[in-house]
Length: 161
Image (cartoon, rainbow, N blue to C red; front, side, top):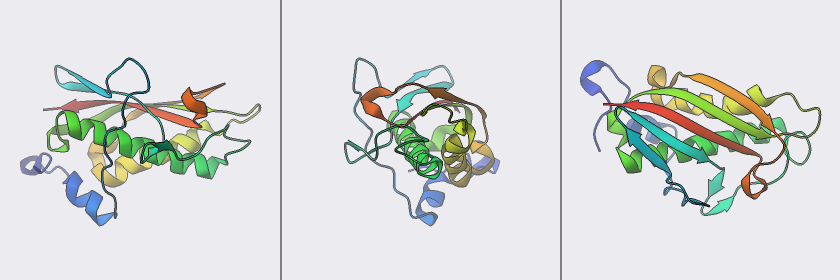
């Protein structure tokens, strides 16, 4: 393991994960015809990550109905951890310069408008683990359905060196 941008004042993501009591899970296998992450130039594009834990969805249903906003935020946090695992497996967190863009999709019950609060779970995890390198542009979108009846999905664009 290498220290992310250690000579440039960056945060050691591995150290922060340990301090937070988190470990990177195995990369979630794709549920269709795509790769978990792809590098193009200095960017890694992470496919939409579902809240998978040990090969199974941590919850199913719509946020605002079967899933509370708070539970949704916890699920978004799992998605973000899965995204970091995909980056780690492709290039290593030691090469991470910045989380550039996060797009969060929330399977929303009719009338639910708390998508930003739900996706804060992912944004906060990136900040907790990566500090300033984890701050990013973001979209939080309500959708009718997500794959496998997942409540939330998070995709990431990251800059690497």
